[in-house]
Image 1 (spheres, rainbow, N blue to C red):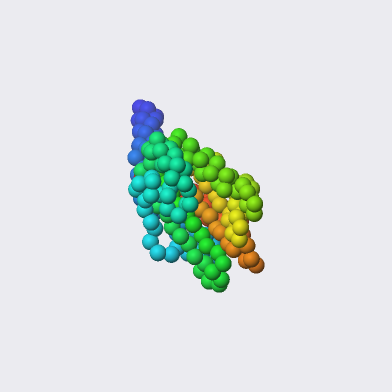
Image 2 (cartoon, helix red, strand yellow):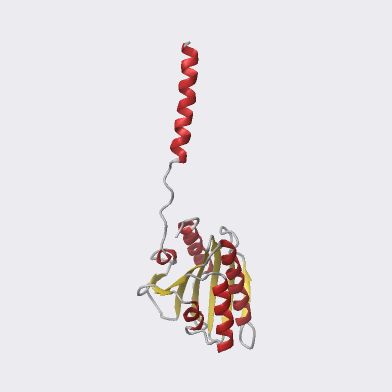
Amino acid sequence: MRRVCAAFLVFFAVLAGAAAVTAAPAAKPLTLRERVLRTGELKGFKPTGVPTTYTRARFWVSNGTGLTRLEVAARTARLKREGFKAVVTQLLVPTRGSNDRGGFSWAMQLKSAAAARNELSAVLRYSATEGKGIGRRFKAFRVAGIPRASGFRLTKPGIVSDNVVFADGPFVYFVGARWEAYARRPPARTTLVAAARALYKRVHGRAA
């Protein structure tokens, strides 16, 4: 009888343990503003000012992009089909030294994970197009440690940038560092990739 009781006690203890694991609280949701790079994540840079939020796709597409009216209309329509909700951007400046460089981070929320993957492909496609022409170049590089992440260097007349973009759930994330072509010591690519990994670790699987 004692052995039977002991067996039941062990059984209920296992059930209680399983229930405790199941009842563990879910990770705290993050706002869109909490999904851009913050101080200490991109070495050598720090956020400047407050993040800017765009809740209308057209404003995001047309703001300083230099696109034609037709291009703006086409990209806006695509974002609307993807269920565009909002995008938050954050500029970064050097923590010290020359002003020959800068950083950039944005996070976009769409209607679904599939829509986010579509937008990720669109960002790469548009960036590759920007790299065509005299004095321009687009060159991809590998980003380890972040599923489906892509990296690329974009060279334009007088300016070079390294960028990493990835999708996680219904969100698309973009981090970049750019510098003037004459800069003696450009930001290290490994530093940018490390920042992207830190961001991914912080936001992965977190609900809105």
